[in-house]
Amino acid sequence: MSDGVQSKMIRSVVRGFGAALPKRVMTNRDMEAIVDTSDEWIVQRTGIRQRYVAGDDETTASLGEAAARAALANGGLTPADIDLVICATSTPDNTFPATSVNIQNRLGMSHGFAFDVQAVCTGFVYAVTTADAYIRGGLAKRVLVIGAETFSRILDWNDRTTCVLFGDGAGAIILEATEGEGTVADRGVLTAHLRSDGSHKEKLYVDGGPSTTGTVGKLRMEGREVFKYAVGMITDVIQAAFDSTGTTADDLDWLVPHQANRRIIDGSAKKLNIDAAKVVITVDLHGNTSAASIPLALATAAGDGRIKKGDLVMLEAMGGGFTWGAVLLRW
Image 1 (cartoon, rainbow, N blue to C red):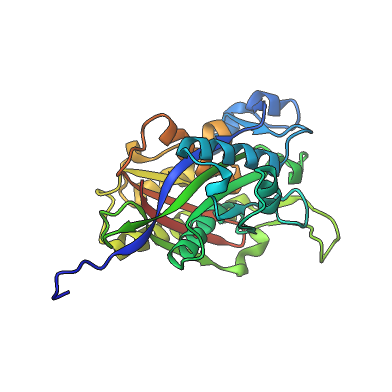
Image 2 (tube, one colour):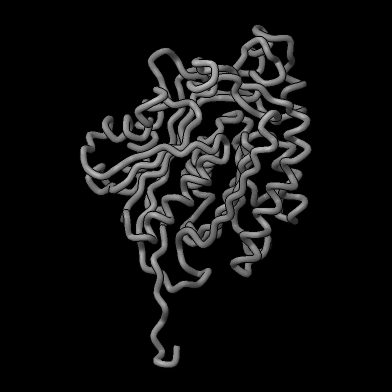
């Protein structure tokens, strides 16, 4: 501008992070006792070595609450500081009310508002994008964004091609409205790119629902078909995020991908020329935790000091629908 005034803008900056996992660890060896599979087969094809499985006293809401409390403590905040709770999940405690409202109540909040986002494994990317839009639109100052799942409840434990892949858990971040300069040097969410295409439904879905079968149903997946599309879809939205911000793979400090399959993660990073040392991997420990996987990976890498303030971080995911998306943010 001619008068020298900078065009300030509101950014959604990460103020805290947290995670929660069920008590029970289930290794690939444990899996061998249930279905006809082997540790070698699972590791070679997926990179998964173990996953966590919720007990009878653990639900999506209880795990989400624990992750939320950890994020609040990490950010030096209390529930009173939060205006909005968004929970990404495909495995809600109830058909309704929303799990986010359940978590809101568990946190002792009777102010503000809460809703769930359903985009399966891309849920957390959609939820962060939604939170950012609410913050920039002036509807909220601080948003608790949670990804929480108990996929063990919707698995067909007789289907060895799917039951070995998924796990339970929850992760959360708090986004806070902060004034930025409007450049890529700003901290916070810099850009978001979301996509969906319902023509791929049959490749990954749950065969039940309130309006069709009146039951919850079980997860069904054509793994090879999903794999065929995954790398191309993921790299498209990541490239879009780079292009819209004038950044490149070299500028990136960390890629935090949805943890579905080590081959998909490696293939995507390679195609985009992202150095393997910049890729956060937790799939070996958590398996595929759907919407919880990215916030769990963020909490792992920020918790151990890898992700530091000022780092440029790319989040990306692909899930049932298909849905897919990427968010570029500065930590």
